[in-house]
Each structure stands twice: as C-alpha cells, then as structure tokens.
Image 1 (spheres, rainbow, N blue to C red):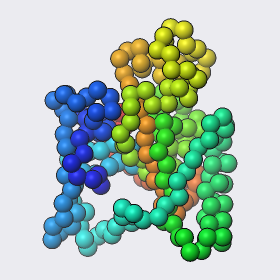
Image 2 (cartoon, rainbow, N blue to C red):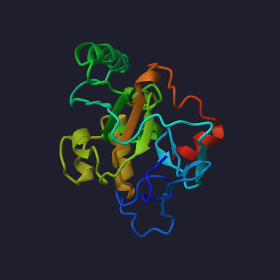
Image 3 (cartoon, rainbow, N blue to C red):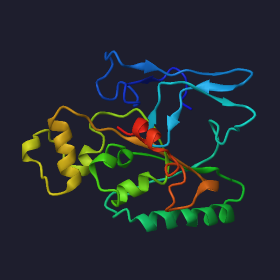
Image 4 (cartoon, rainbow, N blue to C red):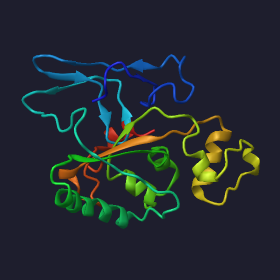
Length: 218
C-alpha cells in the first residue's frame, strides 16, 4: 500500500518527478483503516501504483513491514558488472553474516533505491540482462526522483548535447531515444523480505497474471 496523500501520475509513478504537476490524469493516494481492514492505493510488485483502491481484510492479511522496522540497505557500487548470481550470493551471505556478528540488530529484509531500478529498463533491455533480472527479484515501488536519474552514471557526463553522446550500448541508445523524444528518466525502489529470499525465482513478480502485468507495466 502507498502512504496517503501521495500524488501520482496516470502511469502510476510519483508525480512531480517528471514535470507532470499540471496534468489532468494525476491523482492522490489515500490510506485509512476501518473495521474491515486497510483501504488504500495498492503498489504492484512491478513498481507502479494503481488508482483503484483496494481493501486488505484484517482476517486475511497481516502487516509484514512497518515504518521504522530494521532493513539492510543495498548499495550497488559503480563500475561493478552487477553479475546476477553474485548479487544473490551477497544477499545469502548477509543472512548468515549479520545474525552471527550482530545478533542484537535483527533485520526483516533488504531495501534499495537506485537509478538502476528504473522500471523503464524492463521495456528497453532484454529479459536476460543483469539489470532486468535483478529488478524482477524484488518488490518494486515508485519513488520521487529527478527527470535525469542515472544520466551521469550512464554517460559519464551531464552534457545535454545528445547528438554528441555515444550510442554504443543498448541502454545508451534507449536512454537517448527516450530523452530526444521528450521523455524522462527516473529512479525506483525495491524491497525483499529476508524470509522471502529465493534468488532466481522472482517470488513477488512471477505470480502476476497476464492482466495484472498489462496493468502494472508501462
């Protein structure tokens, strides 16, 4: 569920990050509690909010993570190949390392915010790319970000002279095509509960039906 009073654009991303303050298809999330359960704006595992409110009944659902609960922050270092298997192995090692050496500091999951979690990449890159495979192991969620998120990391410059920038990779070509057509970049967030770590099995996203994929993908 989204927090209440968050402004979203029509594509389920947080409004304002991409110059959409005045678009008529913007909407604001709600979150409230009643005798039946929690009512509010659902966030799909593929990283977007859905304008249709839903109710999670008390008798069927329990809260898995609350504000302030301890999680490990994932850092993705610059220059690394982001090997898919190595990423999974790192998380598995964390499940052993932290309880062993920091038993007084338990954690419930892993969280990350990064330009590498831009869900547009799932439309631009092949499904076997490391970035796409990494994203699909998590429960993705939208975050506020600027419209050039990741640009400097992708091109090594802040230059806006797009015609002079290299198109030597699929990602660079896709980013330049997006920006030259008036589009925008963004960052994203990701969550993986420790109890759900089953690297390679897309535990949150694999179970979506075709109709849910079409609603949640851009």
